[in-house]
Amino acid sequence: MPGQNINKPTPINQEVVWDKTKTIISKTDKFGNITDVNQTFVDVCGYTANELIGKPHNIIRHPDMPKIIFKITWDNILAGRNFHAIIKNLSKSGKYYWVITDFEVGRNIMNEVVSITARRRAIPDYVVTDHIEPLYQTLLKLEKIGDMPLSNRYFKGFLEKQGKSYIEYVMSILEGTSAANPSDMQFDPIGGTNTTDEISDDIFSEEHPSENTNITQRKSFFAKLFSTN
Figure (cartoon, rainbow, N blue to C red):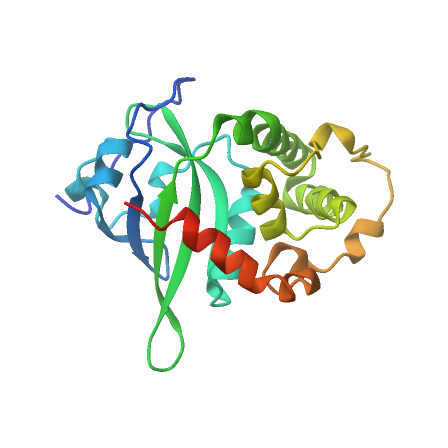
């Protein structure tokens, strides 16, 4: 029955086998509680629809995910911006699955955010192994030392060094045009420079200055990515 308690599984280092041509879809209220899921979501995560409806969406949150990624995502969603993020999810069996997620906000007549629809597609293995996994592992290590302020500072500096906003970085690694790697950036978590503290939070959003000239390209890129199934 909806509302029953579910214990999170112990993660195992094994990927869910699923049809990666499909799109995983869920819908939540503005608080992140699941209101609807499609069959692919059920098939991949392993929970039944009854187990999922009414639950917080973090039921599938994997412990390998840095907190800063979810903060960036929710900050943009609650500001009413559609957003994209690469996320590692946890299935009922403890296995994992990586996806690029397209978050689309729904508004009421007062223009308030009332719902979030999330569509997820599989991503190439090289995107995970060459880019996202090393980055997220670094962010996780920093969060163990200094929580989100430290991972936030590092991530801003990482993006600034490349001259990209977060969305541009996601696009570049999916297109295979980014050569940057987290190991290329030297960072002193204890001392170090405070210059990254002055970088605007807009670097994580569509409002970053470099995004304005590329908004048509960005919309076209993600529309194509999520155009099937």
